Amino acid sequence: MAAEGGGKEMNEIKTQFTTREGVYKLLTHSEYSRPNRVPFNSQGSNPVKVSFVNVNDQSGNGDRICFNVGRELYFYIYKGVRKAADLSKPIDKRIYKGTQPTCHDFNPLTATAESVSLLVGFSAGQVQLIDPIKKETSKLFNEERLIDKSRVTCVRWVPGSESLFLVAHSSGSMYLYNVENTCGTTAPHYQLLKQGENYAVHTCKSKSARNPLLRWTVGEGALNEFAFSPDGKFLACASQDGFLRVFGFDAAELHGTMKSYFGGLLCVCWSPDGRYIVAGGEDDLVTVWSFLDCRVIARGHGHKSWVSVVAFDHCTTSVEDGDLPAEFSGSDEDFHEQNHFGAGRDRANSSHSRLSKRNSTDSRPVSVTYRFGSVGQDTQLCLWDLTEDILFPHLPLSRTRTHTNVMSATSPPATGQTPSTLSTTTSSGGTNSKDNLSNSSTSGNPTNSLPGTLPRSNSLPHSSNPAGGSTPNSNTGSSNSSSSTTTATTKANSIIDSAFIATSVSKFATLSLHDSRKERHEKDHKRNHSMGHISSKSSDKLNQLSSSKMAKADAAKTLGTTLCPRMEEVPLLEPLVCKKIAHERLTVLIFLEDCLVTACQEGFVCTWARPGKVGLLSSQNNPANSPSGTVV
Image (cartoon, rainbow, N blue to C red; front, side):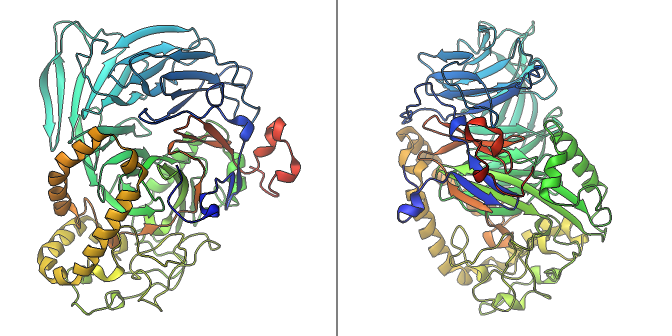
């Protein structure tokens, strides 16, 4: 299925791409798939997923890979950039009847060269615990489907635990299991433990210990994915109702929420230091949410269809202090040389402590870059940089910055006003920290650029409006705290926003009438060209129809609030890289130390060598292909 777009070049599949670190190359000999390498006919089947674990064996080849294709589950030694994949010798292969594997997760704590604990979720609701090295099936949970009959959407071991795991279902429920407990022969009875806004947590009433220990019901519709924070204390949930909900896991308390621009949220991930969450979904956007401020700080527009996976690259995330350049300064190559496998968490913690020491009134510049990636049903891979001009817009930086008068946010402009009259000082420099990438619009030409109050990262020449079709002057008076001059306004910003929205709805009705029509037309156009729309099952369509009225009402209430800012109220990121890399929709993106791994619905798991790592593969060891000067 080709991505929408023009001629041959547009639909050509890329085998390499370039970023500031150098060239990433597809290693064709490191492709994992079914042994016959025949593309899988994926119509109506569950997404291909990939899990990794390191068994810490002495040979230095401790990585293991598990992936599901249709009814089949494969377990191989993963040789990555070191050696070509040998598909003739899977360590374990299983073919299931009557149900299909949908997701899986290894327990990193218990993994050894002789034994691994692998959880597998299924389309009929069961969860299996297997050991693919010992070739034994340990346990089957929810075997009689008395706990939940719906498809398992996500399964994860609880961080730091050898026995607890969490399972999400398309029913919208999550269950906490203990591998030591049985599931009982009768349906569980529940007792309410905690209740909050659109969620409830129940305990299982039983005289003897049994599964599930807890049942969470979260939001409306399916719970598509959840992710634990790096410290394991918080849980981010992406739901079909379009809401991101972040909970304190032990206390089962809601920390914060965010709403998609429209449609359901399909995927979620945390930054390595736990300060930011990225979510993607049916609005074709990636949305960056601040954990500390509980607000949207940026959106990224690059995909032409639903975003299926988002992931942070812990190896390319860096922090540099203006006053203390010694530790983190230098090229990205130097940074990579220091960062060996397993040091990602330490590096992230170092970044975390460095950032947490800085309060918002500190005038010293901080140079921060978070790298994250996304893949979607449009068969495209996008890489994004989240830089300090987006993260700390109120900090004085080494170049001219945009500042907005706080009072302008409370007084809506007259209908004929231009965006340039709202800001007190306009930007005269690029918004990206890397000079070679920054080419931002300046205040000299306000008619065809975004208002100066909104930093635009990695800006490219913009011939079209941002996603959703809204134009820059449709609501320029409403600026959020990302462009405020003082830190004192950040806490009060939600109050300012709500007051502003309440007092200015009638004034903006005439201003944005044309824009909303255009917005609706572009949304319909996008939705009808989305591959998910074309290939979705009839049952999904019925579900969408039945909930569409409620969804429209909710969307009208949240749009323009801190839950879901308008497109022009937050910075819009442009992707560093946006490449078509597959024939079928992409379902996997994982960043490893010396490569990144993608997979598509045809059942092909691809390895992309990081810059300088390509020469490690003996079967592709051609010095002419190796990018010069990128020793990682």
